[in-house]
Structure formats: structure tokens, C-alpha cells
Amino acid sequence: MSRLPFRFIFAGLAGFILFQLFTLVTFAGWLGDVPRSPSGWFHVHLLVLGWATMIAMGAVYQLISVVLQGSIYSERLGYVHFWSFLVGLIGLLVGFYSGQTACIAGFATLTFIGILLFIWNLAVTLMRAKQWNPITACVACSLAYLLFTGVVGMTMGLNFTFSFAGVWHERLFGTHIWLGTIGWFGLLIVGMSFKLLPMFYLSHGYPERLQYAIFTIWNLGVLIGATSFLCESGVLWKACGFSFITAAALIYNIHIVQIYHKRHKKTPGAGVWWATLSAYWLTALGIVLCVLLVLTPQSVFQEKTIVLVGWAYLWGWVALTILGYLSKIAPFLWWTFKYGPLVGKQKVPSMADLINDRYVGIGMAAIAVCLLILMAGIGGDWLAVARIGGSAMALCSLAYILLIARVFRR
Ligand code: HEM
Image 1 (tube, rainbow, N blue to C red):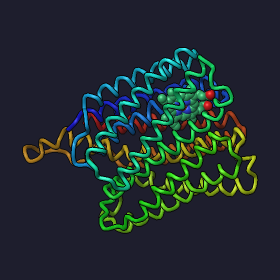
Image 2: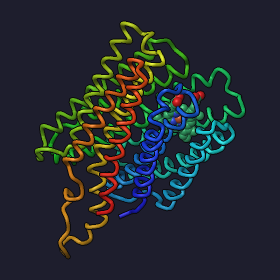
Image 3: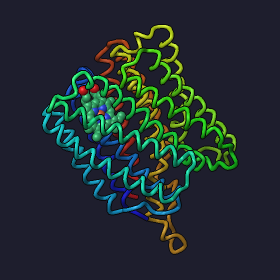
Image 4: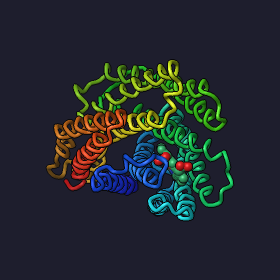
């Protein structure tokens, strides 16, 4: 079994721990800063690149070998990708933190080269395998969106130093966030769930037709939303993008129920249960946004609403899903790596022995409650409540991730 995914998972765990420590040490003080500031850029990218993207890259390397029943195009390229992305990201974060534009521009380029190598490795692997289905198609499209997110991010980073983009910078900003959050994270989670949820639930014989609909509608939503930001088109076009994503999320929920009904396992574990719940939360969020867009479109594009929606989406769905899935993926990877070769030769622990599911449930519930407190604080303009919620969430997340990290010491 390849060690490559572990590199990304360990680096991702370190990124997550750092993010929580920074938040704890400052008593979540960065929540009070304006979003587009060195502190905001630093914290956001530590989370989205240093944790979520890092873990996602490791998971994709592992999952794609399982889906295609073969190895990736080049493991060596995978290691070059890892180091280029890691070094680039560390420099980029230093640049964001200190607000040094030359540092941001230089390391943004190195981070982008890391992303390019990842996409090249995966693109050749997928092309050679020629096994196209909703899972591989979702992974391929999410990679394309990561590529565009990186291109736009690098362009904005270079523009900080060389000032060539003019009014286009603002357009690129919205496009960057939409492509990164909805395109890259969104489609990747949906596509990977098509494979992972049936595995977690031991589900067979469920209909797969809805996967095609979800793939198509989600992609349309990403493309419409991205062009609406890039071309600065009015509220209607943006509302159209939101509605497509909400419709796709709704169908995704129905598909989860289909998988659930064909399950052969009574319960998939607390982490997966919370991840599933967060998918329903995503749909509810989408519906509320669509209604607001019809009734009071201006309120949706206010800074406070955007920040709130960002937290609800990134923590409420993306992070809860990754954290929930990790409670299954980490024991699976570690057990296969360490104990797989020993089966039949000596007594080995079961996969369930590697992590305490009750603690997983408590951890996920605590993070969800803290998120609600944090959002109430932001929504009500109560900075103290937001900081208490943010710090408590950092503490619970830290405890939870240490529970996951302990798996690798068993
Ligand atoms: C090579 C990779 C990336 C580079 C070089 C990059 C660069 C940048 C830059 C320069 C900004 C500041 C723009 C401004 O305020 O004018 C920014 C903002 C932002 N980026 Fe990225 N980015 C990258 C990847 C990502 C990814 C994958 C996501 C995923 C969601 C993401 C999410 C965001 C968000 C949410 C903001 C707004 C942060 C804030 O205003 O505080 N970025 N990015």
C-alpha cells in the first residue's frame, strides 16, 4: 500500500491543529477583523488549503486507486507535488500573515505549481483508465475547478505586487471563492460520497440514476455562478447559480436516502451520521438563501450575510463531512497498512478497536453546537459570543482531531 496518502493526511492534520491553536491562543480574536485583511487571508487559507485541500488530495490519491483498481500514474510525481505544495503554502501563509505582497506573489506561484502537478498526475491516471462514471467524472470536474481557483488565486496574488488587473481584481475575487468552495470542495465531496457512503452503509443494489442528475445540475450551478461573478452580471444570474446548487443538493439528499434504504449495516458510525446530517443542513441553507434572494436580494450580498453563509457552508457542511468521514477513513487506511499483512498470522485488532465511536459522536455534536453559538454571535453582532463560540469550537475540534490522530499510534 502506498505511503503517499499518509503524507497528505499527516500534513493536513498538522494544518488543522495549527489553525485551532492560532484561534485558541488569540481567543478567536481574528473573528473581529475585517474579512479581507492579512489575518482573514491567513486563517482562511490555513483552513482551506492547509487542512481541507491537503486532506482531500491524500484522499483522492487513495480513492482513485480503489475506484480504478490500479495505481496512480506516477508516485514520484506525487511526492514532488507534495513538497512543492507544502513549501509554497507555508510561504503563502507567511506572506498573508505579514501582508508582504512579494512573498504572496512568489509563493502563490509555487503553490499553484503543486496544484498543477497534482492535476497532471490525476488527469493522466484518469485518461489511461478510461473508466468514466459519476464518481470519476465528479473528481475530474472538481480538479478542473481547483485548477481555475488556483489560476485566479495566483493572478490576484501577482496583482498585489504588479497591479495589472484593475477592476478585474474584484470580479476575480468572487469567482475564486465560488470555484474553490462550490466547485472544488462541493463536487469532490459529492463525487466521493457516491463511493464512500455505500461502503460505510454496506449498501448494494441502490439506483444510481440520480448521480447523473446531481453531476449535471451541480456543474451547471458552478458554471453559472462563476460566470455571474466574472462578468459581474446582476442578481438574477447569481440567484440562478444558487438555485441550481440547491436543487442538486436536494437530489443528493434523496440519493442518500436511497443508499440508506438498501443498507446492510444498521448504523454507519457517529461520524458518518453527522456527515449525512450536514448534507441536509446544506440543502436547508440553500433553500433559505433562495427565498432570501427572491424577497430581499440586497441582504444576501451584505458582508455579514456572506461571512455567515461562508461559516455555515465551510464548517457546517465541508468541515463536518471531512471530519465525519475521517473517523472511518483513518482507521481503514491505518488498519490496512499496519494490520492487513498480519491477518491470519497473528491476532490483530478489529478496525472498530482503533477509534471509540462514542467519543466521535460527542466530538461532532460539540463542534456543531459551538458552530451555532459562533454563528449566533456573528449574526447578532455580539463579538464576545462569537469569540466564545469560536474558541470553544477550536477546543472541541482540537480534541476531536487528536482522537483521529491517535488512530495512527495504535
Ligand atoms: C493556489 C492556491 C490559492 C491562491 C494562490 C489563493 C490566493 C488568494 C488571494 C491572493 C486572496 C486575496 C484576494 C483579495 O482579498 O483581494 C484569496 C482570498 C480567498 N481565497 Fe484563495 N487562494 C488559493 C486557493 C484557495 C482555495 C482552494 C480556496 C477554497 C475555498 C480559497 C478561498 C479563498 C477565500 C474564501 C478567500 C477570501 C478570504 C478573505 O477575504 O479573508 N483560496 N485567495
